[in-house]
Amino acid sequence: MTGEFSADWLALREPADAAARATDLIELVPGPVRMIRDLGCGTGSLARWLAPRIPLPQFWILTDRDPALLEIAADRMPDGVNVAVDERDVTALTPDDLTGADLVTCSALLDLLTAPEIDRLAEVCAQARVTVLFTLSVTGEVTLTPADPRDAAVEAAFNAHQRRETAGRTLLGPDAPGYAAAAFAKAGARVHTRPSPWRLGPASAELTAEWLRGWVGAAVEQRPDQGFDDYLAERLGALPEVSVGHEDVLAIFG
Image 1: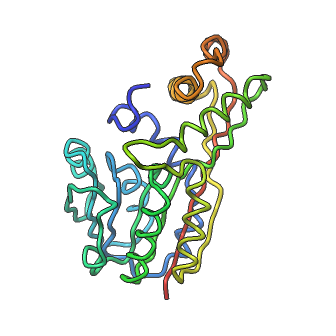
Image 2: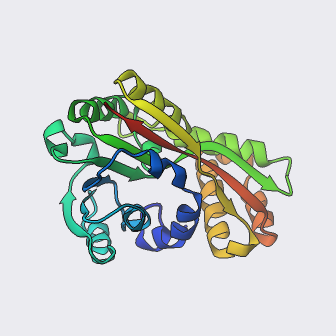
């Protein structure tokens, strides 16, 4: 894979992200929405998807710890949208950082966080009384057609990798969307969730192949004893249709 957070990978997945997000959740967001803080914005894919779907004027604060991705995101925002960038670790946000914000967003971020980090984020958003829209958190459910008897073993190894401990942090991985929904509800929010699966296959061959390399690669890293290399070669030789489970979470305070 070109890199989990590389600009090339983020560009490759952007059309699939846009097609997967649950558009009906936007209709439930209380208005007006004028200031939006996008967490872990990457190259700005979520902002480019959402900005045309809500009225102007808009002021976006794009937040990421990668300055190169922030520069791309700011340069590629739609016309008529005002933008600021904030280079920081999103887990360090405080209620003061959300002053004036009408909406907090993120895409494909929650599964990279820990339970205490999501608990803290829920409390910060509760104190700020700001609506949150978190899209495309992986659920760990993958369906490949045609099926292969080894699919379940690869899925299990990948999901274990997503729940790994790294630098003293135990990631939530596919448990993140459910955990986040419960944490925000406990903090006092009305929570709505929607499935937002990727639909991949031969029609999106480049993305499907890159996703397969990343999915199987993580499984190999977690379980090098399983011999998944032949499985990957066979899947790449005849790309399957794939459904990759994600979930969108909307939490509304007040």
